[in-house]
Amino acid sequence: MNRAPNADERLFNALTIDVEEWFHVCGAAGIDGLTLERRLRRNIERLLAVLDAGQVKATFFVLGSLAAAEPEVVKEIAGRGHEIASHGYSHALVHSLTPDAFRDELRRTADILGQLTGCRPRGFRAPQWSLSRDRTPWAFDILLAEGYHYDSSCTPLPFIGNKHGQRIPWRIELDHGTLWEIPPLVTPSWIGNLPTGGGWGFRFFPMPMIERTIVNLNSLGAPGVFFLHPRELDPDGPRLKMSRFREFVAYGSRKDAMERLKRLLAGFRFTTLGKMVQQWESA
Image 1 (cartoon, rainbow, N blue to C red):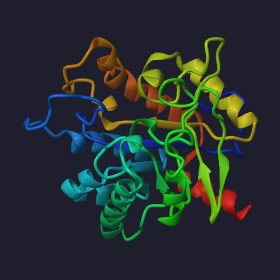
Image 2 (image 1 turned 90 degrees about the horizontal axis):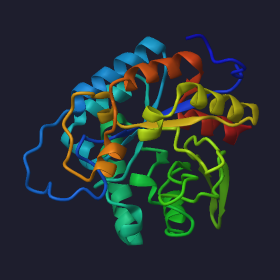
Image 3 (image 1 turned 180 degrees about the horizontal axis):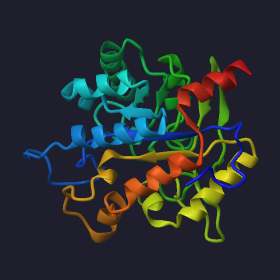
Image 4 (image 1 turned 135 degrees about the horizontal axis):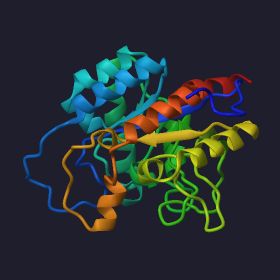
């Protein structure tokens, strides 16, 4: 596919990857003590090959515990020129943590990622969008104090976010500085915002709808921010036993996810969130 019709050549969008194993599903029960096959390395290698072919650099939000277990994977991602950011340490929901526990997760992860890449992370994303001004107002000050420049945890969706939240990046003014908040892409509709920017929504909704949403955002001077998990590019991968609804959300149909991703990368321009923020801060 050529670049999407009306795509603004001056604007960049962002592809982000939450670097987790296939069994890192929030709320999944009964996996403690199980011996589970690890598939991260092969899925990351598959993804990196696609990004190399498209000459696209992405932002990888990495779990600290996973980085400790798979250091070579993190080094390989960074070595290809991609941004390494923080996804916390244990995959715990931020609103389930105390402020001190959250700070500890950030520091443990930053120490590990810094040792592996030579650069401490500048960006953060909470597992399952579990950070917000309503439920965890203290988290933004902690992020700023720990040296973060941006967060990408607030989604303008019902149930897991704020359905009235902003669709374009904005600056959060704090007592000791500012922090950029970068939401994922959603598509407005008569029933509310649709989760077209990643997960099951990216695999389910028609590509022309998703592409029109990017064009519309770009026309406002805003980027389209996409997210995915390595398991979504693994059509034959294992699945945890969950309710049908939760299984669909976590895994769903993965048969054409890779082709959808290739089409997206061919149709629009992409950069890392870190470079976006650098441009905004220097403007």
